[in-house]
Length: 180
Image 1 (cartoon, helix red, strand yellow):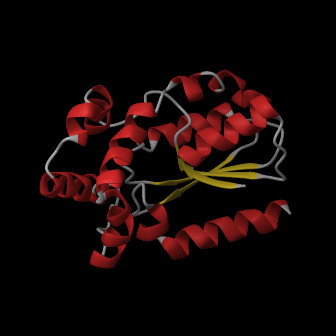
Image 2 (cartoon, rainbow, N blue to C red):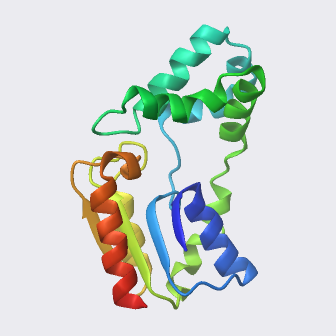
Image 3 (cartoon, rainbow, N blue to C red):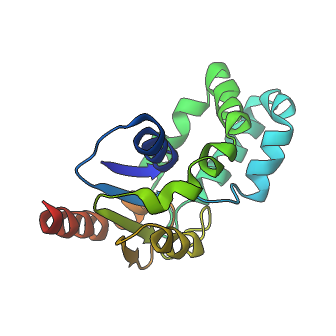
């Protein structure tokens, strides 16, 4: 299982609380430890109803700025459009703010004390320049999981798959071939 962002919380909960079985688990810039979210994330969570009512052009500018901040190297126009377009319709705008408002740190608080129970190969891979989930979380997460390996990818942010796709793919390939 390879998980990124919220996929980390989902995959960890599925394994630790619901018995989902994985041969191995790669956690790539994941939501797994407190505290959650940036200042913008917390502001939206507290005021989602207000953000839902933003005029479309202001919403688009906010989403583009927010999404763009996840990349350390900078997104190409095509990458930015790919990530932003789903959120630009009226339904997408409501969904964008709703998903932030529904994010709840308790989802990882409930399982964080159980990370020491993980009994499968785990790799923690992280962009060294992740401003959304700072690299200190990578160190803390790897330390909490027995036998976890840690690999930091230089010159990459939270969108590591776009910032450093070759480096990430190489790291995943190396890890997967070493544990399987």
